[in-house]
Image 1: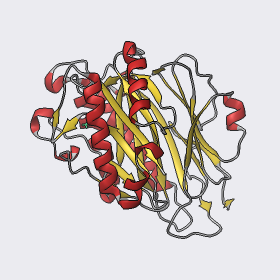
Image 2: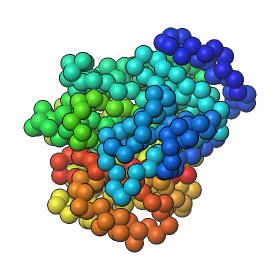
Image 3: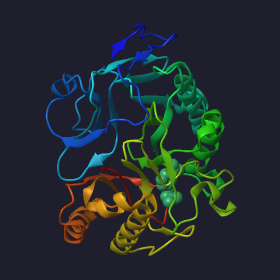
Image 4: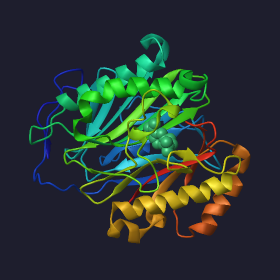
Length: 345
Ligand code: 3EB
């Protein structure tokens, strides 16, 4: 694998050549790790490092992003590795990195500069779509989005259709539209409490397309009824990659389209685990048999006072699960106390 051209500033983007292109990808590896950001980024196989909250170090390396969500218990970085070596650069406001098979990208968009959160989402997604068009893989084709994470301040501010999350959904749908030709990808949309009106989006694309997986217990989010907003959330419940990994969207206690067990975080957690089992079943027998315990999960939790209770309950229900990253967050519906996303395989 080599780098054909190395312009890291705006167009044209680098074209990455893969020594042995084929249709299935080597798996991604994701772990939660402690240590120094510089040491983590010194590894040429590191695609990206995500820090969380005030304890995270920072660096200008385009592979690094700090999300303003505070973790429970102790700080760890989310570290994505591939088989490497990784090249990286910037494209306008976007940062990217790639090993020729995967393309990681991140963008931070100031809401006031864009006008509002709706315009910020449209602008950010337009930029992501433009990056995908310009960053061609060795076969000359643009990548396929596998997974998106969206973090914004005060996600529940505003009433009814004026809620910031709903405005975000409108802008996202407009900006993402050109890239949706391959269908939507798995996603997470979560609220920060840092007061910074900056929309943060990061994601993963790949040379080989994934397969969308929906949950038979849930109405597809893109088909939610009008009561949840004028523009449906544009994501699927999971993406199964060509490396047979399952990238699981933010999953909560939603059955059909309705929130369940309002006021009871542990009951919502159990319903969420039932949803996750159902989703794994829909993804395939191999993925179902590995189970949730084979996944690395992130838990978004509204109430910091519930961290011990939630982690104890998860340990009891899933004794073999790797220690999840619990992040104190707002969830996109006011009646949801907890949400889980992750990757299995
Ligand atoms: C739900 O099931 C919970 O708007 O990208 C989960 C994952 C949710 C992603 C998004 C929203 C999103 O509808 C909310």
